[in-house]
Image (tube, rainbow, N blue to C red):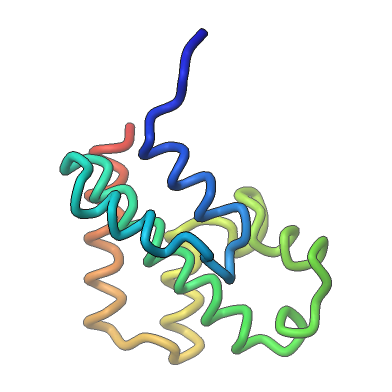
Length: 116
C-alpha cells in the first residue's frame, strides 16, 4: 500500500476548508521541516488560497454564495479556478498592485517548475 507524504496530507488538510485553516501550525511545520520542494508548493498554495479569499470577499455574488456556487467558481475548470486566473482577477479588481502581481506570477512559475 502506498502512503501519501506528509506534504500531500498537509496540503489536502489545508484545502479541505479553503477559507479557514484550523491546523495553521501544521502548515508552519511543513514550511520549516519539509524539503525545499514541499515548502515552495506550500507557499504557493497559501498565496493561491489568499487570493481566493480576497476575490470571494470582493465579489458580492461570491461573498453571499453557498458552498456549491463557491466551489463552482473556483473549480479548476471554472472561470477563476487557476492560480494564474486568480492573480489576474485580483489585479484587475485592484486587490493587488502590479508588484504583487509580478511576485505572485514568479511564485506560480516556480511552483509549476518544482511540482511537475
